[in-house]
Image 1 (cartoon, rainbow, N blue to C red):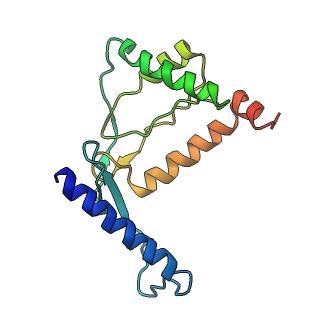
Image 2: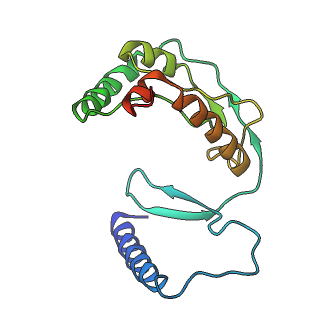
Length: 165
C-alpha cells in the first residue's frame, strides 16, 4: 500500500470508528449467536506507512522456541539508554520484559538489566504457542500475562513506586 492509500484508509477507518462509537452509546452491540470473543482479531501495523490491517485471529498453534543467542547485545545499549533517560525524566520506572514469538531471543534482557540497573521479568516459554508465528495463541497469551503480572507486582522497585511496601 502506498502512502496515499494508507492515509486514505486511516481516515476512512477513523471516521468509521467515530461513527460506530457514537452509535453504540445508544445501540448496544449484541450478538447472541457467537460463542467466540467479541473481537477475534489481530491488528497488524505497517512500520513503513502506519497502515493498520485487521486479520481474523488464526487458530493454528506453533510452539514458541528459543533461538541461539547472539554473542553480545552491545548494539542494543544506546537505544536502551536513551529510553531509560526519557523515562527517568518522567519519573517512570523501566521494567524490561518481552512477549515470546516463534524463534525467541531473550539474552538482551539480563544484559540490559545489568547495564541499566533496572529489573526484568522473563516468564517461562514452556508450553507456549503462537497463532501465526508472531502473535501468541489466546491461551498462551493469558497464561504468560498471569505469570508476568504475578512476578511484576512482587518486584521491590515496582512495589516502592506504587507504595505497596
